Amino acid sequence: MNKRGLTAALLAGLMLAGCGADNSDEGTTSSAVAPQAARQDAAGGAAEEKAAAPAAGQNVPAEAPKLAVDQRSIVYTGSITVRVDDVTAASAQVTGIATGSGGFVSGDERTSGDGSASANIQLRIPADKFTSVVDQLGKLGKEESRGISTEDVTEQVVDLDARIAVQKARVDSGRRLLAEAKSLNDLVMLEREVATRESDLASLEAKKRRLDDLTALSTITVVLLDPAAVRADGDEPTGFLGGLLGGWNALVLSMGVLLTVLGALLPWVLAIGLPAWAVVVAVRRYRRRTAPTTP
Image 1 (tube, helix red, strand yellow):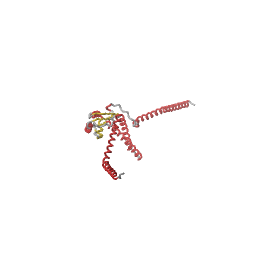
Image 2 (cartoon, one colour; image 1 turned 135 degrees about the vertical axis):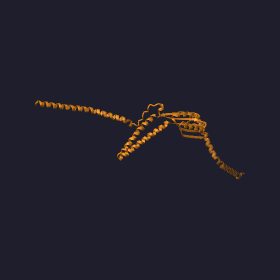
Image 3 (spheres, rainbow, N blue to C red; image 1 turned 120 degrees about the horizontal axis):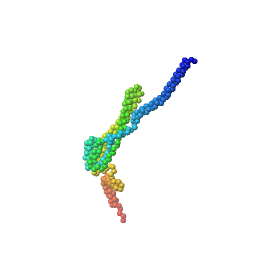
Image 4 (cartoon, rainbow, N blue to C red; image 1 turned 90 degrees about the vertical axis):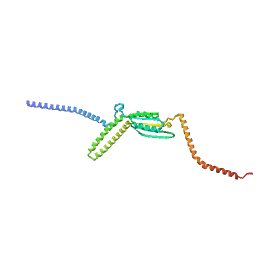
């Protein structure tokens, strides 16, 4: 072999070695890039799942934000019992207090009999006037009892707001898909889905309106009693005195029933009993006169 042939063989060997090195480098690079791409895809999928988490977790209650007391949603409920001289006049005053504070009467139940009268009136009052209205009601007469309760529904309000926003977005997306439906099957399926989403949205909005109503208007139950009325929540004596009073009331009731029965029977006794007694007496006298005398 001459020098030119040897030189060509060496160059060919170097070129083959370079190509093998390039191929091995590319394989190494590809094997190194593949796990990195897989990691990036996994990271992207996790990011997408995190982004979709609020929409998928719409039923999870949202945490209530840290708000001041005057910014929270509070439901106020109260009851008060007042003994007054005139139940009718006091009821008119209660209505005036409710109307003057921007509220209204939502229920009015009155009873009278046996020389006593009482009234049970329910009021819906703006929440910011709740305390002042209860104080005014207590001044109508002698206040006997008062009860006030509160319920913080801020977390429920925030949760409903988030769920309503997500449900509105679902309804809008369903309507867009419905407008793009190409086949009858898709149209029927999408119409059913949109109807279900709209129904869920209406239910959430109804719950939200209910909470808004309870937080905006407080409920107060007013019980008015005249001096002779007996409270229905059990202020009668218990124990020995309670048993003695119950026995006396039962005896009085039984005597009243017995006298009622006797009063109903007395006319019949006078109308039938007296003539029968007179007939019996006359028969006895007649028998005595006609009976033979013994020697």
